Length: 309
Ligand code: UDP
Ligand code: MG
Image 1: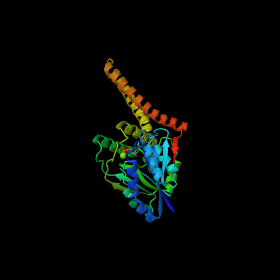
Image 2: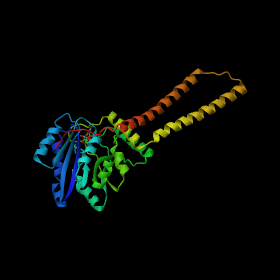
Image 3: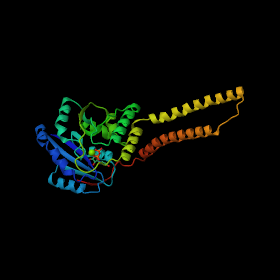
Image 4: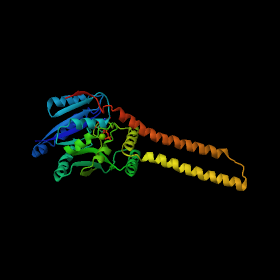
């Protein structure tokens, strides 16, 4: 018998646990018609509200509901990894708890799996209901990212994705500490069908992503899937050396031909400021990669479990 593992990372989602379950189980007839069992794995990412209690209540009523509860907040990426590790299904699907990823799309997703696709991913074509400034930076991020990374990272891609066991195993094989899931999906490859839908606003509760958190996340993405910034540092150094060389020649010739007294400390100050600024910027880029390497070398566990049902 086939089994579908539904992985739901939750962080302070007490209002959504039940709603999600009932919305998902609206597909029960469909699962039955395929002769497929389903297991729901709620990954509690160190919630401070009643999330764990709600999941336990559900698990008491329905044996197909499982709980993994982290010792603290490790981030959604860690939640996804833990869920995929525990998933026993031939298929796994990742879904947000807030019903922004409609479970009603599942039958359509399975249609493509049956056609031979290895994974069915979703992408929102609109960013309705999002602050304009956030949309602007998000678009910029995807544009830059796709220029500087060989891994394809799709604009508007959600983590809502149905995968076969083969793809799940490929993702699990990438046991890196700095997990940028959107990049990992692109990196593993396989035949992926993209479904598009209009953005759905969160039903209850608040988004867990502040602008600052998203900004840091985008830096993680860049360092995890591109080394172009490192090249930028070297190229910029080279360009400035060239520029300095031209200027030296220019000044020597000017001195020899016109005997100009050396003038202008303001310009000198500007040059020193700019050069030291660029140096610091480049050292910063190297530092970013070094810090990621540092975290990676430590080989700390990606998550710690406090409780499991
Ligand atoms: N989430 C999580 N850990 C975190 C932040 C978020 O597990 O540190 C979960 C959250 O509970 C939700 C999903 O990740 O199920 C997406 O989060 P959210 O809806 O806040 O993000 P948005 O949809 O606004 O991008
Ligand atoms: Mg959401």
